[in-house]
Every structure is written in structure tokens, then in C-alpha cells.
Image 1 (cartoon, rainbow, N blue to C red):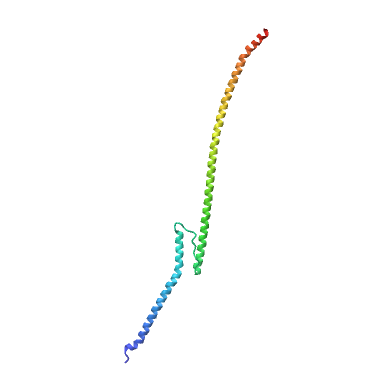
Image 2: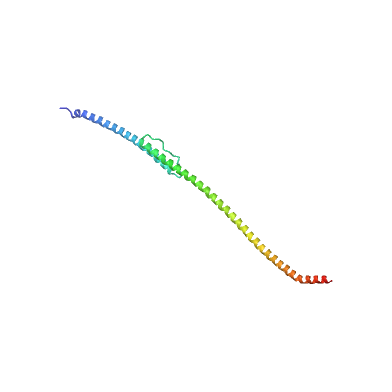
Length: 171
């Protein structure tokens, strides 16, 4: 009879070798899986970081994604960069329009102040004209009274003048 250990010795050796290689293959596969996962998630994490930077209080619109190795991520990056470009141009246009609007509002406010000053000045002049017209009316009334008095005095003096003329003709 053959001892049992001898029969199973080669089988045990083959089992150990197979377990070793299965373990080596598992470690290599795990390493490759981690490497591939980092290749995929790395650019996505960078993209998430760029979005986080855009979302901060200052919202820096100068942020752009760099060119990526994979076609899908490259397309995503180009689309993102084009989108941010459009947003940046829109924000710049709104800022320019706001500045122009502020200047126009200042100009309108200055014009309104100028019109108010001119209106007040015209109102003052109108008051002065009204006062002058009133004074002229008073002067005209006084001249008319004086003319009436002169006419009455002339009438009152007409008869004595005629009498004086007759006396001087008789003498």
C-alpha cells in the first residue's frame, strides 16, 4: 500500500500553488481596479472641484477645465468651458449695461436738477415781473390822479385866466 501522504503530496502542492496564484491574480486585479477607478474618478473629482470653486461667493468665471485624456471627459470639459465662456460674456455684458444705465440715470438726475433750478429761477423772475407790473399799475394810477388834479386845476384856473385877460385888455 501507498501511504496517503504520498498520494496527496502532489495534490497538496498543486493546491498551494493554485491558491498562491489565485491570491497574486486577486492582488493584481484589485490594483488594476483601483488604478482604473482613479483614472475615471480623478477627472470627475477635478470637475467637481471646479464646480465648487465656481459656486463660491466670488464665483470666479475665469476657471476653465484642462484637456482630458478620454474622449467623453474631453467633450464634457469643452462643453463646460463653452458654457462658462457664455456666462462670463453675459455677466460682462450685464455689468457694462448696468454701468451705462447708471451713467444715464446720473445724466437724467443732473438734467432734472438743472430743470428744477431753471424753473425756480423762472418762478423768481415771474414774481419779480408781477411785482414790477403791480408797481407800474400803482404808478399809472398815481399819474392818472395827478393828471386829474392838473385838469381840475387847469379848469379852476381857466375862469380867472379869462377874467385876467379881459382886465388886461381893458387896461
